[in-house]
Image (tube, rainbow, N blue to C red; front, top):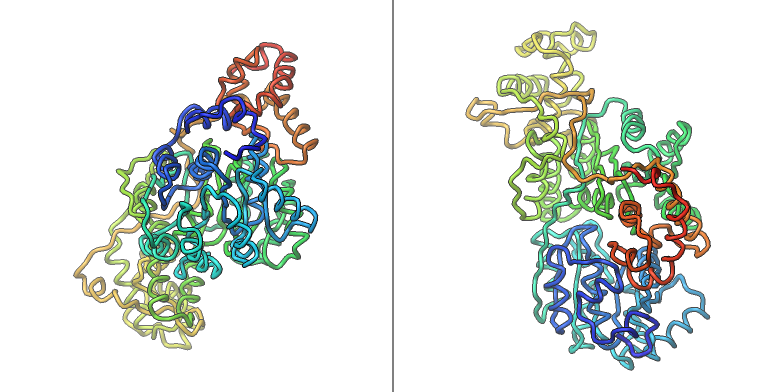
Length: 617
């Protein structure tokens, strides 16, 4: 740690190891997953590539080595808002950290640069554009650097959905600073992206650390659209009243309409997308970070760069474009490790829309093939009849035994049926009607509906007219949707809404293979009891409300988000333990030495005013 650091923990014990830093600075008793291995490798001066889920504790993997190695760590991040939040959290733990990016005024930037040159900072956060300026690189050569941490390293991949071309230039760090270790971190990277990260950023060698991508505290749920906004409202009112959440929508217009509709129903909701002016976006994001119970409606194509730990749900009103996008977006829920929901509804129109976009793509064939594979994986996940975690985690090359007990299919196993014959009838009908009509017309023909359109087209005379009259309309729409999801059907590439046979349907048509499909259930079944951990506290109790009110007032006085003071999990632990002394408070997870000194008396004062009954569990 820098000799002139302001960290009181360092002054008290300059010869700490990683476990001591974890306890004294961050207030945690033990490492999670592979954190300890990663920290040991980087502290020893070795390069590392770290794949760890959102909320898995990636930041500690470079923050603790930065406090153990001499000099200043440079953290590369593409998101200004995320840098600001992480620096604020570090400062509240007594760590000397700062931001250097385009958001600073000239005076603040000069002051920060002088502190950096004087060796007064443990960590400095920069955007890649700022770091790679010749002037910046020249004065970095004048200081003692402890390490480079490259966050969101998947941005280097030209195959990814978050590609940032300036990340490619970070390869120059190895040539310019060959003795400074580098750690690249990401929460989403398939095998292709991992290889590209190693090639671009760590070509001189690295140790690979892959932690589990499983987020056991998140409950995954996928349902069928049936008045999606009302379904969303029912879900929020039933399971997350007063909670913070994110709703992802396909278009900017849908974001605006959904936010306005939720607001009209009495919920605090705001839109957030690239079409808003920067001041409005910033204001909405700041409110989301600093207020409890606010819902943001965002486009799935727009990364928010938030570090808010108490997002209790992420909802998708439209299909995301890939499994990576879905995993990254749902990963913004429950970063504090407490129970959270990943909720999504989709329908036939979603599949048609995304398949149409892929069909009209002008990208190179290899890129188109990769995008199709990603879509197929996402659709297979949506239509999965068993535990959702194997389907999700297998995509990231991680095995899972299933029966997680915390997804919709485990809690309410869906019914399945042998749909081979029904699928053959539907495929035959698409073929007999000329492969140019939409699902509604195909279903009418299958059911033998005597409509004017069918009569004019002569489709009442073809062999498939009425062969499905023994099956109801909803089931036929379900069959067609799932045939699209499985690739046996595909949309008309001209974009007219018609259906065509997929290239792999021949064996199914001939009866040489069978097909099992889910039975659709629109109305939710009675919710089963979750096996996930709960916030074991009565959130309506006076004790809980008093602690949260104290936290909110303190956060407003310091102009920081409430979770920077203490996470909800820490407040719950405090309420459970009812410490009466600073020494007892210091034993609670999330209470480091700096926060103990700064907030300990205030917490004890709040607890002292509470009657014992107010904290009953």
